[in-house]
Amino acid sequence: MNHHPNRLLWHQALLTAFILASLAGCLANYGRLQLDSAVEQAFRNNEMLDNYQYYYSGRENKPSAIIGIDPAFQFSSKYWTAVEPSQFEIIVGRMYPDYGYLYGAYMMAPDGRKAGVWYSWVKTYTIKFEGDRIIVFSPEPFADAGNGDFYNGGY
Image (cartoon, rainbow, N blue to C red; front, side):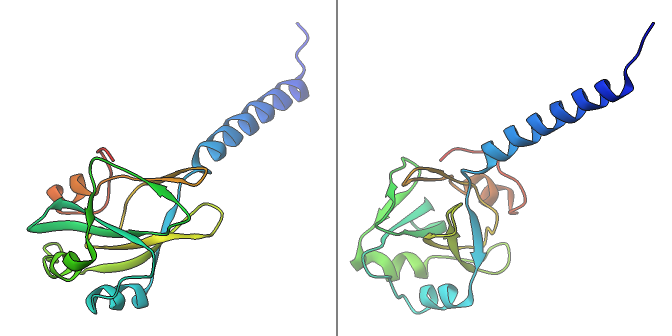
């Protein structure tokens, strides 16, 4: 029987490259948080960014997160409630750091653009981009579990 070890290695390398490229393609549409003390301070001072639309997740009397979306992005979700400018200070004031510290962060698009701002004690989240459409998954599973180390819910 004639074995060709080089051919077998080549096939394994090709398969590995295909799998890694597939995974990279899947992850390419996901954003990340960039913690920023200026964002945190802006929320603490009840400052809204111009033209941003703000939303909260969780109960109105105890939200688990507040986000502000840059107007360059489209956003809609049944799990996030719009915050009227006149209610912003009230909603921010209802943020309780039940599980530690309240974090401020920029929500970064895969291409490096700032897509919005984030304020929560949950510092792990999932955000997906479909062109200029942004999907921010609700942090409620984190808030209910009392930690920010995993995701298992909807958006």
